[in-house]
Image (cartoon, rainbow, N blue to C red):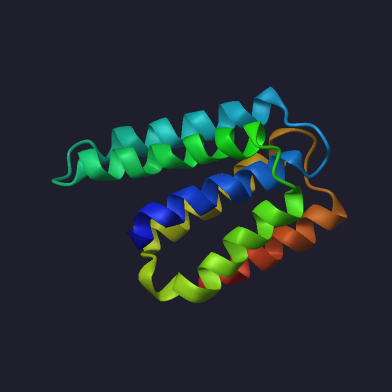
Length: 130
């Protein structure tokens, strides 16, 4: 259940990163799709691939739900931070690396990283390092 919730929270976080400049760009959505599909292809040969595939897809579903429900950037961001502070020890290294890749690629997809975004990304990477 923790792993499943991780991907839901990750989707909210990616929404907050994409929305932080006011507008979600198609480039940002494309990056999310591409990385998720690449990860799914990579894991197809493992025993638990079907479960992991579904969980990774929750990231995109959660992103879309956050967008549709017009979550505030701070709500979505803080939701991920709170989840990780409570559950970091239950999130495996593969999930953390997956999140780091998505965070960095989404943040740079549109216009690069602003000074404000850099501070937030640094905090996120520190939270994921725990």
